[in-house]
Length: 358
Length: 275
Image (cartoon, rainbow over all chains, first blue to last red; front, side, top):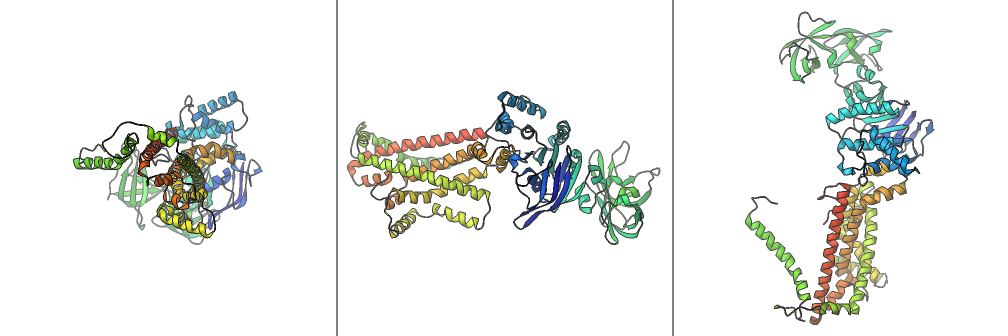
């Protein structure tokens, strides 16, 4: 659907994109995820036609886009500020793009009403722009873009201006909307949770390039680098020494954990030399409360901090031989104790719960 | 301001200040209708003869025509220049931007007499004749900074993604300018036109130095002040100007509120909130 081939973008002396190559499939919900300044919005603007790449090519639906301005591309954008025209009402905003095409009045009205009902704004057509709430503005921006029946809808941090509750609701709604219309959505976001919830595939960007492009599950459980791992959720890192490399796995000596044999599938990235880092998600470590609780492997640590979230408790546990305490999350099931600082803790883990990076 | 702790003497001071500021202005209409050639109390009686006198003074009419010509030309030129400069300064980055913008704004603080004298010297050295156009030149110089100040705030409040959204929806650049950009910065443009028109209309020093044989209104009024007998006529003229200025001000404020309401902006901080 969209082919990016070695796309470079330079603003003056600053190289914002350093050679992006990727394919975005038809009908998928695709996210560009990364910290601010990683180039994700620049890439979106290149696809939308608001800027031209310094070198490299972009094609949409098989057509090369070089020299094609934004108003002639089969893409539409939902802007971060929503860019609702303040001097028009909702109907005029939504119908703006169609009015410049020669479309009959009745057909125009029908399609405006259709778009408004698609985003749940029936009956608000005559509202003035300044009478809209943040959530409604976002829906108007969506309706205004979708009415053009684009091949690709570009969304530039569309939820960042909304409060948390509304944002969570819109995440689900956007996902449903995308499935209903079947249009390719490209979302730019710095919120990893948002990307995980909504996307079919996620491209994690850093320093102007794609660090990893994969499904949300794979991104979370098998990040290819320490940087990706740290950006998606929480991960504990431990220093490790490579003892031996076999054809189907590697043997490591991990701080606190000791000697571990790890299969190749848990080494998603490239390895370099004998030093390595081992990553473990907080929910992959378990606190063993009773004698009857058993685990594949066990460690004894000391609780240094407890943060109670209601459904979960997050523990900071100092493990032998490791300076930085490890974060361990435990679901607060019925009858389960909450430990306090200073308590000794038995920590259970398994070799299948760790990821190895360079 | 309805704070109960505001000391009494502060409100007394405020009232005194306002009286000092506006009482002399109120004398204008009073003496304009006074049936006496001498500006003095007690009042003698009601008359409209001073206004009737203005109707037949040919020199005054030509001064008004000159002033309107100068003011309209000045406000148009300086607003057009202001739009260009404000747009460039709020939207683009270019070398020495701060220095260039600073130089453009300097006439705001430069004494007018210096502008007037130096322009006079330059024009004479160049061998150019003094005319209304030399006055317009001077007025544009001092009006452009005001235009920029008003318009820069209008352009700064203008969200650039509105233009991009319009492009994105398939509307070309020219149509986007007329349908989106122009309507949204219009309040700023009108504010700029009104302010620079007013500044040019009542500017005296530059007009006095640079005008040739054609006097503008302030220069005409100044020339009348030498004759005591003409004083009531000046009062009448002042009354007319006062009324027109008030109407213009009310119009500008009404327009600002209307456009702020339309765009949903905060009434107190809307674009062109100079009034």
